[in-house]
Length: 241
Image (cartoon, rainbow, N blue to C red):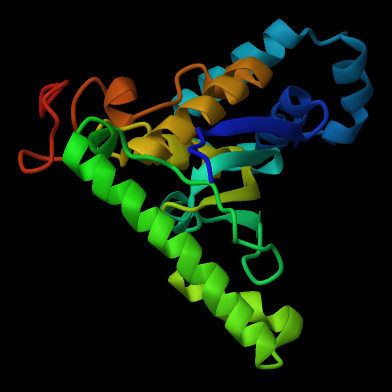
């Protein structure tokens, strides 16, 4: 049983992502058929700089639906079940998560909240609780196996596992969903763990597709004011522009 920290990897994204988005945008305003333009996009006859500039300007107008044609797939490890319960609320997206039915949790790793790590009494109680849970899981699993549950024992023993337990997940979002994800989860009011995950994902997206993600992040950073209202603002930005 070990403490873990988040690790995010970009597994893949739509090939020729910038050109796909450029073509989709152009089809909205172009009288011709963008498939005839496609070889020029791939050959560089229409430069990437021109494509990026066009995409950025159209997005500034609020026209964002064509970016849904491009998606990114991430793999995340060292994250808690508490995080993934928040993550899977985001739509439109696809998720494939490590199963506690089939993966033995006898030696689970865990995520340690910074506030608990900084409080000696809370940390001692947290670690004691995790140790108790680990032993309880093993005992319940062994008792169920002895009672004939066999490979199904983990399916029931997992009910004692905490939200701190590490999980691993693969998730895919299109660019528009990612922008929404970053707006909510890069905010300083977001829970600390999913905010860290969002920050890593945003860095990978900015590197892969800056024309779309250069200005992505918390809404206040793009708007120049806080849209959360007086009750929820963190104070970084004024409430009105």
